[in-house]
Image 1 (cartoon, rainbow, N blue to C red):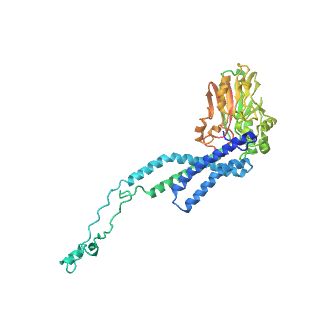
Image 2 (cartoon, one colour):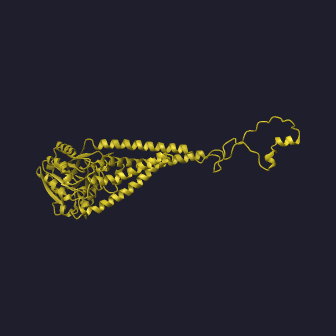
Image 3 (cartoon, rainbow, N blue to C red):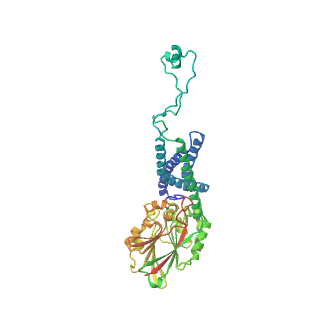
Amino acid sequence: MCCPPSRAAEGGFVLPVLGFVGTLALITGLIHYYLWRRLVRDTTRPGRVRRIGAVVALVLALLVPATMIGTRGGFYWLAWPGYLWLAVMFYLLVLLVLLEVPLLVARLVLRRRAGAGPATTPEPPPAAPQPALVGAGTPDAATATTGGGPAAADGGEPPVAASGPGPTAGGTGTPDHDPGRRLLLARGAAIFAGLTAVGVTGYGVRTALGPLELDRVQIPLAKLPRSMDGLRIATVSDIHLGPLRGRVHTERMVAAINRLDADLVAVVGDLVDGTVAELGEAAAPLRDIRSRYGNFFVTGNHEYYSGVEEWVQEVDRLGLRVLQNQRQEIHARGGVLDLAGVNDVSAAGTGVAAPPDYAAALGDRDTDRPVVLLAHQPVAALEAARFGVDLQLSGHTHGGQIVPFNLLVRLEQPVVSGLGEVDGTKVYVTNGAGFWGPPVRVGANPQITLVELRAT
């Protein structure tokens, strides 16, 4: 994914990370204010419960940036509550925003029904006849029975008993709306959004921590020699070793790769969310990856937040060749294929690594041979297509990781998941074997991919 993970190891990333945390704090503050309005203020009356709700909303708002900062400082116990709340918060926001229109319609209907009552106060029933009084025929008695008593003598009006509802401030005779029904409506929406958000998050946690899904895809390449038909490349990305995933995750992934008995293995970036000192032991099982013609690695954006120079050396020590704007000839089955790799686009401007150099990796080659490019981000295909790349293997997107976040990823990347094409270059994007941030996957299962190249 695109956001800074655990630590900015190089000084050049301190300001960007601080800026990221500040922006995150502002955004989460606004989101939590909205959630407070819909889940607390609209569902409670002024009093103790509303005050408690405000305190809870404030604590949860502070939890998000605290998790981002704390996990970088080694407070990994913050990861589970912080990242789980981040997922629940996201789905609460999505659901409540979607409910705004139907809730508005329901409120208008209630207001219209309340305003459809009679505009005037109904006539009171006739007064019961009074019993006859002694001396009723005298003028004094007549005056007494017609209200001409002391009150009339003072020039005032006789009191009249109320016999029906009086008009409201608006003079319509009925309330403008029913506050009881509005409260019930708000509570119903809050309960629905809360239960749905928690349920979807629970499903997403189970999926993210569950078994890796295998995606098998056959991709025809026009230049592939017949003798190399069926060459298989095991592709994995976005492993994201870090506060929530460790050595066991790596061992499970390596075992899944080895079961594929692949010709090549390509790890296309975002291996870690921390330094070699923190995660070297978790990455150690990578040395057990098996393939016929070699294992290869290219950097992702998260490597540049985690000490890229040390990780390049460590990954190479574990038996994966790191292609940094380089190309490797793969001789297999009597044919030759060019396997190239470029640094991630986030390397530009870091001062600690060269930016992606497509000319160095792809220029001055035999264009009659097929070339497969390893590049972490799918957007690299916009440049790769200019060099006649036949196939690009990428990750980075996590397949969107959390629906409907995948819709936003499409704004940045030309392909989000699976096989696509960019300016004549085929691009395959794997969903990734791990996750970033919330341990949640909805609509994009964790996976490894077996790419089978076919001659046409």
